[in-house]
Image (cartoon, rainbow, N blue to C red; front, side, top):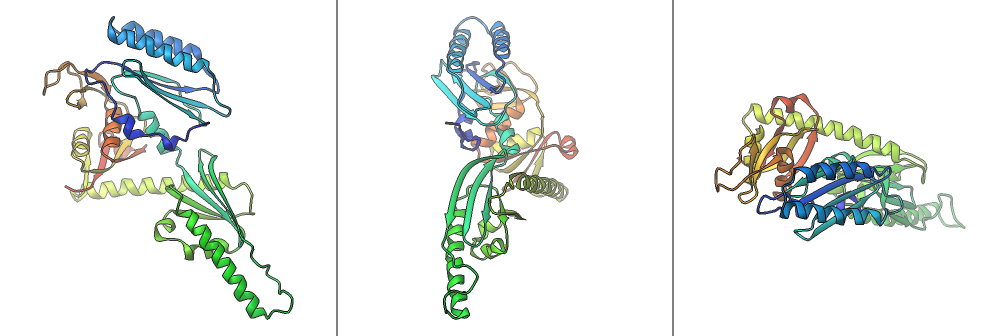
Length: 361
């Protein structure tokens, strides 16, 4: 059974680390549509050659054996990507089988490398698609063009034409009551959609009628209504609507950031100030330049990190390890319940690649 990208527990992964600053975790991302075993072999050889003899190297070898044995077992039907976080020393082996392709990557570090997942979550927005007419509805959760959940609702609603001797007024009253009951059922099921966006699609006026029965919270998630034949393929149209909405949102986010900075409001910019705000629990949303990587150091004992390079922690004197500062920001943001947005814009370039909105000063 394939896993949903949205069911990955980022907070749990972000909380894992080796207290002794040892490179004990292997994080591997694989495109299994075209499994490149040579890539795995070459990366394993390169990593092994620079690891010192002893416990860390032994752990690497045993963990790679563990991973290779797992890969030999084969992949699931329809699987395109595989993510593994493993450490023989820590007795950790976590795997995710995905229906989306991944860029091959193998990282050895003192903690699971989760930045690629955060980037995928930003790219593959899960959304709801609700298709309905006056007596049928289908509710979907879609990610990356794939349907992950489907609920079908059907209701017996009288046809429009007049039935056997009833007065037209009585017939219309009964029909309206049945449609109302049906739309209420659809609205109740839409409350269960755990998504950021919703697209409504279908023929006729039922889409507009449904709005009267939706809660404010659900209404705010609706970003588009599409006229379409019931049961038709509208996924490509709905994804275009989602992409348009995301572009508008990101432009609004950046303009709001500029406004907050100009009036000395609830915003910070730059690596140092952003890290400080996230650590203090002040950061509501962190904005990161898409594709940004910054070399830095980290002390796992103190959980302190920064850009640059030092060999010993200035607080406890422990040995530090080299890290990607952006990866550490992502991990910290996950632990502190800070929303992450990746944005490709020159404004972020000028602000040092990282900025964000504060919950409070």
